Every structure is written in C-alpha cells, then in structure tokens.
Amino acid sequence: MAKLSALRLVSLLCFAVVQTSAAVLVESINQVPHGWKSASIPHPSSSIVLQIALVQQNIHELEWRLAAVSTPDSPDYGKYLDIKEINEIFAPSNVTYTAVESWLKSHGVASYTRQGGSIWFQTTVSIANAMLTTEFKTYSDSTGTEKLRTLQYSIPEELVGHVDLISPTTYFGTTKAMRALRSQNVASVARAKYLNNPQKPSGCNQTIIHKNETYQIFHPDCLRAKYGVDGYTPSAKSGSRIGFSSFLNETSSFSDLALYEKHYGLPKQNISVFLINGATDVQPPSNKNDSEANLDVQTIVSFTHPLPVTEFVVAGIPPYIPDPALPIGDPVQNEPWLEFYEFLMSKTNEELPQVITNSYGDEEQTVPEPYAVRVCNQIGLMGLRGISILASSGDTGVGMSCVASNSTTPQFNPMFPVCVIPQAVLSL
Image 1 (cartoon, rainbow, N blue to C red):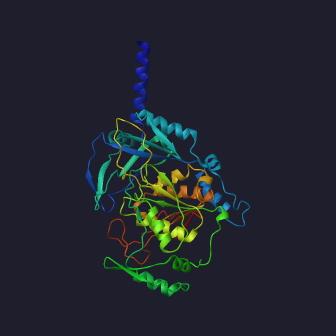
Image 2: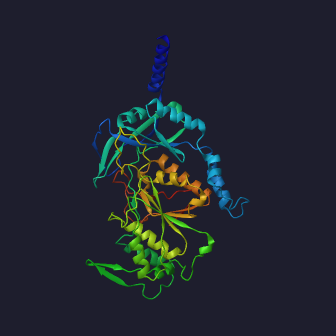
C-alpha cells in the first residue's frame, strides 16, 4: 500500500510540474486577419491535428554553406550534400526530441509521428488549449472556408530552444494559384516599354471564342520563342528531371495532357505522381478547379520533353495517427507549405527531381514570421542538396492597388514563399 501511495505521489508531482511550468509566449497576432471572422467555439472534444516544428541544429550555418556550394569560385562549388549529411548537420537533437515527446506524453498524447524535423500529433481541442495556454476557435472567411485557429499560443519554459513553432495556430492562410489575370493592360504597356521581346513565330496571335469569351491561343512554339529557347531540346541522357507541386486538392488530368500533346503535335509523355499527406489522384480529376495543375504540367512537358516529370500532389493534411476515439480532422484546416517541404526533406536526393517548381502563393503579410522563416530554411536546405526550387512571385506586381492587412493602408504585398535566401529560390 505504501509503495502504491508513493507511485501516486510521484504521478501527482509530475502532473503538478506540467500544470505549473511557466508558459512562454511563442506567437501572437493583434487581431483576426482581414477577411476572417470568429464563427464559433468548437466542442472541447473536437479533434485537432498539430505539427510541432522542432528547432534544427546549426541552422545559422545554412546561408554560408549554401553560398559555398553555389558560388563558382568557391572550392566547395557544386559539392552538394545528400540527405544523410544534411541530417547529421541540421536535424533536431535527441535532447529536443526527448523534451518534446515527454511533454506530449505528460498530456496524455501517446501516439505521434515524426517526419522530417517535425512531430505530428492528434488530440482534442480542450487538451490543445491546455497544452498551449490558448483558446482555439473556428474562424470563417467570405468563401465559407472554416479553420480552427488561435490568435496566440505559448509553450512551457523548458521547451524554449526546442520548438520553432506549432502549426496550424496563428496562420490563417490565403494560399492560391498564381494564374494569369484577365485584364493586364498596365502590365502589357510596361512590358512593351521596358522589355526586349523576341520575335514571335507567325500564328502566335490566334484567338478562339468559347462561351462568348475570346481567348488567345498560345502555341508551345510561341512560348518557347517568348523565352528564347526555341530550337533547343533537352537531352534525355542528361539525367535531369523536373517536378511541380499541386495544392488545393488539384491534380493534373492525364487525358487532358494527352489531348494537349496530340493537338500541338508533341511527343506523348506520361508523368509520375507523388501523393503527400493523404492526397488522392482521381482520374479524370473530380475538382473543377484543376486548371492550375493542367497549366503546369502542359507547359512543363512542352518545354522539357523528354525529361521525366513528377507531380507532387499535396492534400494539406498531415499523416493522421490512427485513433478510434477521435474523428478525422477537417482536411482543409492546414496549409500545405510545411507539409510539402518536410516531405521533400524525408526523401533522398535520388528520389527527387533536380528542379521543383511551385506556382502557388500566399500574401506575405498573412504568413506569421516564424512559419515563413521555417519554410524558407527548408527551401534553403533543398538548395544545399543541389535541388532548385522555383517560386512564383505573384500575378500582380507593384502596379496593383494593394492594401495592408487592416484593409485601408496602401502597401505592396510580396508573395510568400519567395524567400530571400541566396541561390535557394529563383523567382519567376
């Protein structure tokens, strides 16, 4: 009996330590982001899936190491690292894993998943509120999208130095495809004035009328001429490969690609597909808004044939931990950036293309700084592996009427994740 009492006393003391440990604020935002409003308070037993991005060792070395392998006159030029070497230098320490996993277990979270430099876990809203000294609420935007978010969160003092951020928390997200705009008169004038456009082949100004709308037909030959690469064919023997990401539940259509190739007389080519975080590849795609994925694959194939092409379809939800007591969370609650790059960081160099392009983006002002820094560091690590990440700089540019998040102050809004890391990102 005395032994049992002692065990109970130890358990109570441990519980007390968890409950009374000083909480340190990690992130906070002053107000609900523009376009969002508080919709409801979720039931305490509602399910939530969170990602803990762990502090990476030696991350301060990333920039100079990246510059060394990217600078032609550097003795380390072209000496890229494989994923094993990356992990030896930058992976979170065992001490960090132990500290965070002990914290999870102290709150009854027995099941969790490691991926890249992050830990995923599923719990209830009430437990998440207690763990992070916060209050999650359901927020909605004008489209009806609902997300579980909070305006601030904290972690125990002993986890400072082990946790970069926890997501999704203060990141509401406005991820969108960077599609061409219908009205581009201002941009067209600027291009005509300042850019020396190469001569376009005959037949590049054809139009077609569809559902009473007039569209310009842009032949692949015209596109190649536009970028000055007409007459160039990549070598299939080079070993080069290219990939692209598909977010927002979009997937490219194999049948549309075949039709595009046939219509323009292009050699027939299939693509490989990686499914990330519960993504599905339904053919033909059931999502009517698949135009971005189709535009990407058709443009890439017309430019890079016969190089192998890979599509990374990202569902934006993390790998769920099986738990019969908890329902599956809402698949639209998480943003895809961290999930995507953590997945890439879990693969060997040989498994990935040397170039990966991404035509989606968020307004930078909507992305919390810790989240943005973490994603940019992941992109930098990809560059250190010799893998180039191409990111869209947006559709609008400095000529559009932009406003700050308070919806009144004029402000140019750059697009995330166009990151300021040398050689890590090429902005298109």
